[in-house]
Length: 339
Image (cartoon, rainbow, N blue to C red; front, side):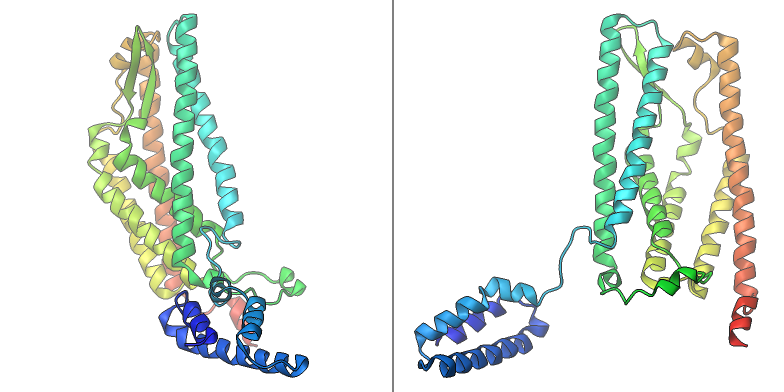
């Protein structure tokens, strides 16, 4: 086996099987042409020395094979701006929540200087822990999107400045909304299934930390169906990213999810209280007076009620819009274009 054959074989080790033979033949033909041209230009015979010279110029087998493979990214250039924007939104939110929690902890108890320092250190540690978890999940989601959406890696078409004046069709899907929905639903699945302990308030009481749950066991009975809902929403948004537009099937899928969401919210509204914190617990665990604690707990329950009502009303409105889109025929804009 000569150097060319050995070189071609080595290049093939780094190529996928389905394209290996074609690429090897292409490289072999290119090398033979280079050797013939070099031999004619220099008047040297095609021997091992000339072959080594040409192969050095052509490049190492790994480098040549890599030139035939698509670029590989954990997060590619097209998704990176959305990834960066998501991180820029997520980190300030985490920081704001950490500051709110720190303020609650410092304001509820008469702390000594030592306890103040301990509380602040605990808040900083929780912030970094939450930031690492959130960043890890964001990177994981975008890496999955990069792998699952090969159409995002295609070369962009020539840009036409006149496209700025065009209005996007109502069915077109941009990257931002599905990606944001995937991240939010994934975060909900992770938090409510694996880290439910973070949904509450913790503060220094006496010689140690006290944690107060905010959500009742009645809420956590809904977590399995909520997890199913969030998972199906992730599936829907993956489909939208792959298709690049709304279609009849995805609209029916969305209508079913909207109905499920409204149904769950209605069941929560009519069921037992979703707030675990009572006025007695709140008052006993903090310097707040019993009457003030009762008012705050009532406000908390009313806030949950109004959130559920808003979810129901908004869901019904979205369902009506979806049905209109499914049953409606061509829009006036389309008819005008056809004329």
